[in-house]
Length: 264
Ligand SMILES: [Zn+2]
Image (tube, rainbow, N blue to C red):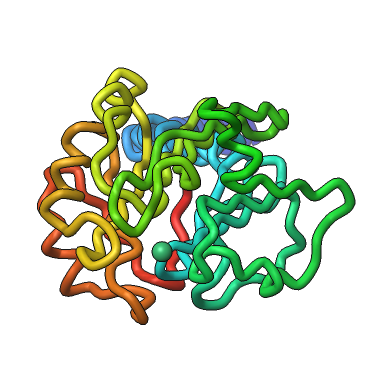
């Protein structure tokens, strides 16, 4: 009987010992995959923060406050400011007159700059500024409208455009961006003084029939020294000519085709 009990006891001990050994093996085995899987998990959090920071930072600064400029062709432009105000300049060419106007600017009295009736609607309080309001008794006026400051500058100065009844405009928007519109003109004395303004965008007429030709326009672009010099009002009866635009030989040239819109 004692032998049987001893036998049983030793059997229990053997089983217990084997069980322990099996458990430690199991523990070691289960611990091993955990440690070996860690290195592959680490690089992911390291590489992910960079793109997610870009994604969260970009939209708030870029989306809401950008003005846009739509080139209708010939001498006609439409600007929509960051505040949503719509400004038409020398309405005449192309499409894009559906947005109700807040401001209409006219550089001079020729019919290819004064087709105000194309603008389908005007918001209440819409203002119109022509050369008659902008140039009074030889004084070039500035109009501060809050969302934009409109500054009349010299224009004309050729046999077809009397300098006393023509203006160009410099628009300064609420974010400080500036756009110069030459109007119909040849070189003026004032152009050289604009360089210090460090203008952002400058449009130069260049038809070579009623106004300065493309070489003179390029020389004016050098004088004005804007960050982007853009040819417009290229030839009578044509809203835009890519071929002619490419002859406008300035280092900081920007070509905008008719019907094209840029973000300012
Ligand atoms: Zn014209």
